[in-house]
Length: 475
Ligand SMILES: Nc1ncnc2c1ncn2[C@@H]1O[C@H](COP(=O)(O)OP(=O)(O)OP(=O)(O)O)[C@@H](O)[C@H]1O
Ligand SMILES: [Mg+2]
View 1: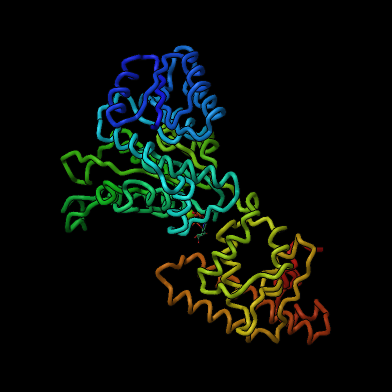
View 2: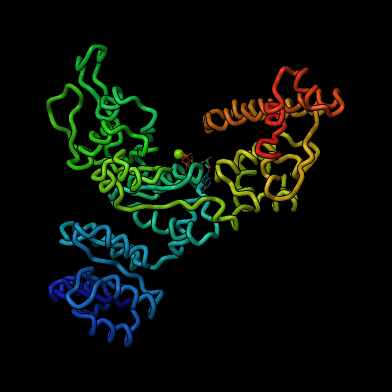
């Protein structure tokens, strides 16, 4: 028989759960102070503990730690008042499986939560997290920080609280937001992303809140806003740090009240949209610099998830490489030992996106009869701090480079639905560099290595020549 421990200084709470759970065939023990609690956990082994967060002689987090130390397999649910949601999130980070809000008005929901944590589970919650994640193309890997982050993300996914995702460019903020949406109860509702830096302020109001027919010149018909369309879904506010102060005011208003008006509308509308915001800027610093509103940050940052840069999770490099090779239908290829070594020493300023781009580039450049990706297929920047020399294709290879490049672009063209324009443009920039370089190399050969003459004949400066040869920063 499963055993449940209820820790609350109000005995009524203990009695309430005893009544509720004994009927379902569970055995319930009640503690009303720290002393009871420690005695009980030293004597009996529990399957689930319900722990009140605010206690006269202790606090829930402290007791949670004691419990997890002596009975790591016992699940814990924290009980909290709404005003302490941030502390409840702290409890989740310390190993609690869930939290419930007091007073318990929604009994069905409460019972669902209890059933979920008391049911016999065939898969561990860790496996469950990994399953949802891999279905959505969100690789967690073995890195400890990423695992803690994914676990926390999964726990809070089902709560209706706002989330702020921080992380350098390309660390996977959008992938994570999408994962949270799909792990939430809103998974079959819309997930809408807007880039706060990209929408002009003048358009934003009607974009977010919609407008009535005739609200302004050009408003020929009624338009639903994002808050209306994503009503029971998730709104992903990307690059929130770029939002103008005017936009920040508008967002704050709807976050504070949950209410808004369509432009030109007279009746107040309610929204139940869940907000996930993302930024690669330090918002606390932006608050200090007065470019970001403190009250808005407070509303958004109920839970902060910080995605570590790729250079701090290099143990998972090979996993990502494998995954991305699969994504471009090139699972039959593998990276040589030397290539892997270079990748391990590289700092990855563009993070996971940069890694994906490098995979795509290498696959496009590879000759069809080769299966090992050697350093010649990697961009030169990878060699720079690894001490390796990449023997890059010379001007004679221009033709094969162009063929590979065209193949790559055309394959993006075919898969245009899951292609980001960024990746296309990155590829175009690479093309520019490679072509420029090939011409320089050819001319250099023609002038037997004389840089001055080469530059003169190409009508460029020697500085430009150095740049084109990718010798920027070298003496
Ligand atoms: N954990 C991951 N698993 C699988 N793919 C990932 C992961 N993280 C990032 N990626 C891939 O890397 C690329 C960039 O990810 P994403 O757009 O989520 O980054 P971002 O943090 O939002 O970047 P930015 O700040 O530049 O907008 C995408 O192609 C995405 O699929
Ligand atoms: Mg992004």
